[in-house]
Amino acid sequence: MPEPQNQSDAPPTLPSSAESAREERVSSLVGDRFCTDCGYNLMGQPVLREPHYNMLIVRCPECGTIAAPQEYPLAGRWTNRFVSAGAVLLLLFSVAFFGATNLLMLGPPAGFASGATWRMNNQYMYTAMPGQPATALNELGWSQVEWPILLWLWIPFTLSFLLGVTWRVLLSHWPAKRLLNFILIEALVLFGWIGVTWTASFREYQSTSYNEDWVFFGIPIWLGAVAICWLLLSIGLRFGKPVARGILCALLAPRLRGPFQFLWEKEGIGN
Amino acid sequence: MREPIYDLPIVTCPTCATVAVRTRPEIVRAWKWFLRLDWTLSVLVLQIIMLAAMTGATIGYLTFCTFGLPEVWNEIRDEPFVVGIMASSFFAFALLTGAWLRFAFDHWKPFRAWMIWSLIVLIAIQLPLMSAFAGVTTFDWEPNHQDRTIPESLAAMARQWSLPATLAALILLMLAPLGTPFGVVGTMIARFIRRYRWRMRRRRIRQSRTKN
Image (cartoon, each protein chain N blue to C red):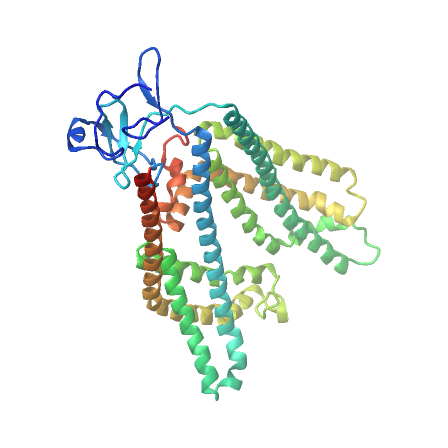
C-alpha cells in the first residue's frame, strides 16, 4: 500500500476544511448509487478529485462514507461459480416462463373454443331428429356456435398483453428490432402446435360427432383466438416499457422504484 | 487492507502507481439489487392484491345492498338497532375506502386517486353484463330466462342491478373522502417508522465507526 501524499489528523471520513478546499470538483453523480454503509442515494452529489491519491470520490452527505466511482470487480473462483450458477438459474427460469407463456396462450382459448363447440354439440343432440346422421350438424353452420361463451376470451387476451409487457421488462436489454425474433418464435410455437393438433384431430374426426365439431368449428375458433392472443402479446412487447412504467408509477411511491430504474434508461440494463 | 485516510480498500498498480479502490464484486451488488427488487415486488404484489380485494369487497358490498338488503328489509325495518348497525357498516366501509386510497396511493393527488378509483368501481359494476350475455349466471336477467330476449334481459339487468348498484356506489364514493384523514395519519405513522429505523441505522454506523 502506498503512503498517502498528505496525511492529516482529521477523522477517517470527515475532511478538514483545508482538505475540502483542495478537493477538486469534477462533476456530479448521475443515476442512482447507494451509500455502502447507510444506503443513502448519492445521486446528484459532487464527484471530487481527492488530494491524497488523486482518485475520484463521492462523499455520502448523511454518514460521510467515501465511495469510489471507479469499479474494479473482484473475480475470485467462488465469485465466478456463483455467477455461473446464477446464469444457469436465470436460463432455466426463462425457459420455464417461455413454456408457461405458451401454455397460457394456448390453454384458455382452447378451453373456451371447446366449451362453445361442446355446447353446440349438446344443443344438437337434444334437437336432432332420431336417425339423423351426426354430420348433418355441419350443415347448420356457424350460426349454431355458442358465441356468448367466447366473451370470456377477454381473460386470455388481457393475460397475453400482460405477458407481452412482462417479457419486455425481462428482455429490456434487447433492442426493439431483436424482439421481432421473439415474436416470430412465438408464432412458430403457437401456430405449429395448433397445426399439429388439427392434423391429428382431422385423422380421426369421424369417430364422434364432438370430434367433428371440434375439427370444423372448435379448432378454427381456437386458431382465431390464439392469433389475437399472439397479436396482443406482440403489442405488449412493443409498448411494454411505457406500460410497465405507468403501472409502477401508479402503484409504487418514487422511493420504491429504484430497482426498476433500467425501465427509464434508453437501452435497458447496463447501458 | 484499508488505507488510513478514507478507510477504503485500495490497490496500487505496480507499474504506473495509479491507485484504485477495490469495489464489491458484481454478484454481491446484484444480490443487493435483488433484495431491493424483492422488497419492491412485495409492495407491488401487495398493492395489486389490495386493489383486487377492495374492488371485490366493494362489489360484494354493493351486491348485498342491491339484493340482500331488500330481501330482509321488511324484517328489520322496525328494529332501529339492526338498521343502525347496517348504516354504520356502510359508513365504515366508505371510511375504510377513503383511508386506504390515501394510505396506499400517497404519491398521488387525492382527487386523482379518488377519480380513478370511482372509474374502476363504476366499470366493475357493469361486469355482470358479460355474465348475462355468456349465460353463466342464474340471475333473473339471464337471456332465455322466462323466455326473455337479450334486450329485455339487459333492461331487467339495468333495473335490478346496474341502476341501484350504481346509486349505492355513488353514495359510497361520495362518503369515501371522509376517510382521508385516517389515511393521512397512517401515512404519517409509516413515514415516522421508516425515518426512525433509518435514524437508528445511521446512529449504529456512527457508533461503530467511533469505536473503531
